[in-house]
Image (cartoon, rainbow, N blue to C red; front, side, top):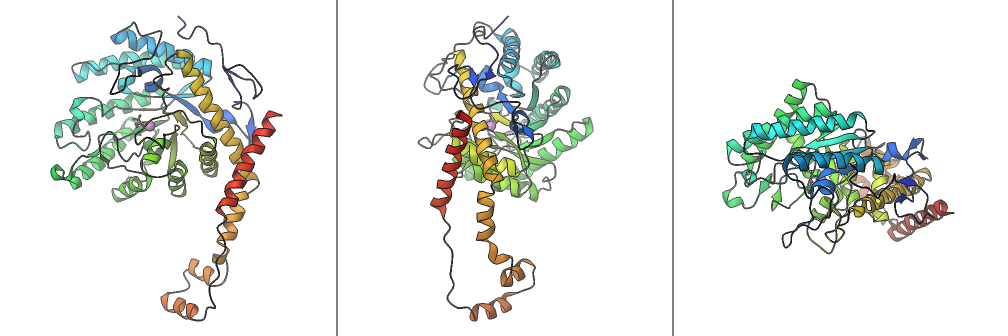
Length: 443
Ligand code: XUL
Ligand code: CO
């Protein structure tokens, strides 16, 4: 059965095409810096937003019109799998991601839940065989069920810790079975609401114990995917322990986990932490910890996680700049952890939104690549720090000086001169590159 009957294969038709169901800028085969766009961008569809979510919000019922809406239970779960592979093929999506509960319903007991999951995992495996699409990452949802009310690995209740461990154990087995390239930990409930009832040290120590057990179990079963932590400062929990990349990195280093994990960076989570997307990517990159990306965007007028499809070209450009500087994403990808608005309830909107996001990142890739080819920012930055390549600066870098020698040097200085940071000029140059790149691909 076709779930998206009126949609044909989405192809690259270029920016002059009037066909809304075509890529205007994302040309999978096109080479950028010696690699195809498809291989550089590694797009992924988020199962939960695209096939599971119904558009409900705290104030209203679901709105999404889907051809599987009449089904229930395991029939619904199976239909969604079939629909998803039709969608991946029509969109030419190389990857997808899911939480356990997105694909299979939770039952009354853990063993029944696992049985449901096994049936669906078999079906996914069968579909993967004849599909070009692969699994970028899977994860266990340890935030929706009421048992996680006080956390999962950071719960005060040891039974919940054990239950969460069983969930991740199963998740790792599924990851191995389906050849998942990564396994994600997003700690939605791993944090606290009030310090008045919280043993923060025990909770954080337990979280680290949990991660070490996950690392050990992956080794034991021979799962060699990349482990990823997805930082987020808040929502649903008031204060999450993996607040941002810097906080997450300190945690990993403190507990000797830094060699086993990288970060999955989500744009909207960066915004909530008071950072830009590119800030989080930069912190991860310069520490060798950039693993994967949840590609979406927030709304600066709203203080919560709106998970919009990324369409801001300035942001996709600066993100792709960091990703190219990182030498790509390795096993990671650009996962659209993004949902169509509640008012965009037609199935066609699922295609429009992914096409918009894929085109926005394709443009970002091209602009970033040109900026890098011309070394626009590199040359400026090198020049800005030139004082550290000679004289006293070089001595500081090479560890050949100390406070006494520096005081002696400072006492002999004439009035210090600084150079302009040229922020506005640099922004204008980025705009120029954006517009020139768009003009080039249009003519
Ligand atoms: C929530 C979020 C999650 C993770 C996976 O904000 O981003 O969907 O990506 O659990
Ligand atoms: Co996410």
